[in-house]
Image (cartoon, rainbow, N blue to C red):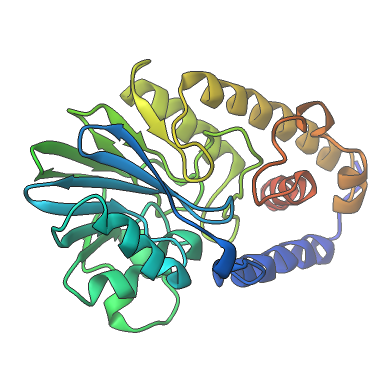
Length: 296
């Protein structure tokens, strides 16, 4: 078997790391044109959406105040606050982050300054980039935690390393609503946090776990697009992930370089319907290759 030079693999991963750093700052996003769409999905439960590069925000609004999942990029803060003002006049009490990437966390500081408590998994706090302390989580957990808020039982749990090694999935048990962050959900090509502890196999395992904890009536809120999907979309995503993983792994074991694998278009039969997200099919293949090449 032909051996792929380690330097080539290292360069591929380094290039992907640079891309993640740039993407975490929202460069290339025209925030002036981004508008917030508010979608009610249950009593007192809403999803705030912007463009495909912005992470969805799940909202619980009630007598105790406002509970948010994620905060989008910082330049969206005023638009988010205007949307929330139409839902409730209560303060934002808690924000939980699904993972470390800036499209889900960069608005933390502006939310925390008036008093919101930022919550995350332990590993997410460790991976947060240098920033003012107000933007950092002040309450973290290792396996799971539960909040009782607005009459809701909010179960927050950590899957094994998947999109990153600091992922959180949030389940409103009474409303039967689950925010799954960036694990496989809506039909798109997912980012894989190969430099934040994420992996292809972990993404697959997390998607399978979601379907065990949720049920067929659960309104599942993905990290992007949506606002709500069901088991069908997750199942289709898992088929895509497994198939592309196996194709790329076979190519790596045959000694193919990243460029050769990209040129072979291993996602071609899955491209239709998945090109609406921020990650292109080529970018996805490069992420899969980078993850598998370092372990095989």
